[in-house]
Length: 84
Ligand code: FES
Image (cartoon, rainbow, N blue to C red; front, side):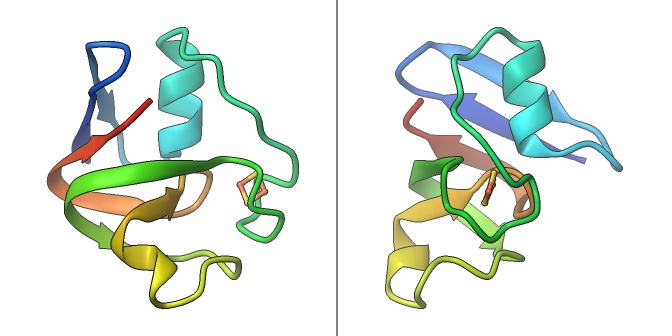
């Protein structure tokens, strides 16, 4: 499990094991675009502000991983901050 602070919406979402960050955001009422839910299309990307992320997608280039994350497959460690 990990926690995502959503700076734009002011919400904090808890992401359970076996749940995607995308799903947790949708459940919390955050308006998210998505398509493949498999880490390949890039539709569900969000700006990453701080925190350690395990990038599990096939979309972002290495330099993009510093400040973006793919919410359908990638996971934070502890607490992360995203700009949604
Ligand atoms: Fe396609 Fe997340 S929905 S990469």
